[in-house]
Amino acid sequence: MSLNIETKCLHLDFDSNSKAGGTSVPSPCNHYGSVSFPIYQTATYAHPGVGQSTGFDYSRLQNPTREQLEKVVAQLEGGIDAFALSSGMAAISLLMKLFKPGDHLIVDSDLYGGSIRLFDHVTGKNGINFTRANCSQDALEPLITAQTRAIYIETPTNPMMNVTDIAATAEIARKHGLLLIVDNTFMSPYFQNPLELGADVVIHSGTKYLAGHNDTLAGFIITKREDIQEKLRFLIKTTGAGLAPFDCWLTLRGIKTLAVRMEKAQKNAKKIVEWLKNQKVVTRVIYPGLPEHPGYKIQQKQARGFGAMVTFNVTSEEKAKSILNRVKLIQFAESLGGTETLITYPVTQTHADVPEELRLKNGITNQTLRLSVGIENEQDLIADLAQALK
Ligand SMILES: *Cc1c(COP(=O)(O)O)cnc(C)c1O
Image (cartoon, rainbow, N blue to C red; front, side, top):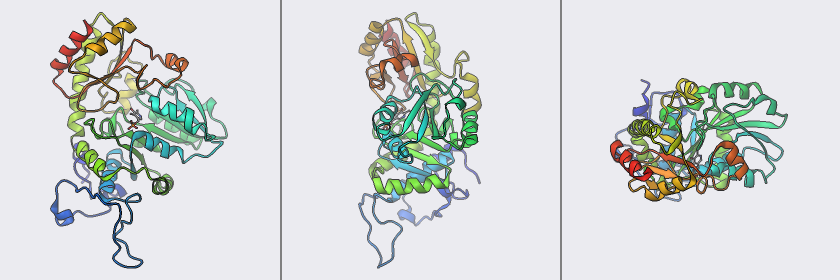
């Protein structure tokens, strides 16, 4: 029996051949029949005898709650394995340890601000070179050199919602022996599965849709390649940023409702997008579900939805700031993907550390606002926006 995605948010598919699901057969006696997977709040594990192990030795290496979460996430993304890290940035940092000085990466120019900061100020300093490209429209092949090892993209990008054709990019990567890494945070595995489209590695800020309740940080790396799996197991054990048991449990609990949350948030987002388009102070609405969005067709082809992230421009900087000051129900806060609707000002928040020149090139101005639409009642959200936009 192959399970559908809503069910996979709640149950492991023990019949599947994937390592993610098939490693241990569930029994009513496992964990005393506990329906909610227990939190194994332990640092270490006693050995039955010399040379023997329960399979768990020390929680930096393995923890049952983390293992359960990793299986669930691997299953949702169609990977052979997943790695649960203490944040999205911890996941991306660990992934960067796969590369060595002299290696070259092609990275999307519009990315989460923290990823740009990491590449510019940490990974770059360690001798790894980057070329930025607008991966949704630039020709990538001319940028590939003998040192190029990977292409790193987000689709849709944060915050400008550029949509890149994952299958076409995977084809280029395959032809040149490069890894294709996709940060799939904005879509979540509910709407998009890059590994199935040819990507080698998927990244998530689990803080966002996966955990989904604005109450914990988490990050994931998922892969379908055994060579990468092996390197990452070694790296997570050696560097130690694995997600703590309680945060694993919160994320497991959050994932249980991923399907219903994504559907409701997307429904709200579509209503808000239609409403925003008719407001005089709104000069541009960027949402991949709009037929006029340049990535609309590709998004339809490669994803099962358009998500609940909406970027829009207003008439002036003053207007943008007044909206941020006036929202009541909607909260002015960084982050996204949670049950509560949040509004962000990328210029001073998520993308404050992105050099101004690059920010403007990407189209992020002081008139740009980003909404992460939550699961409240849509009329309540629109009423709040209406009074804030006045
Ligand atoms: C938030 C975010 C990250 C970073 O994740 P943290 O959990 O905040 O460390 C990475 N990529 C994208 C697209 C994000 O939105």
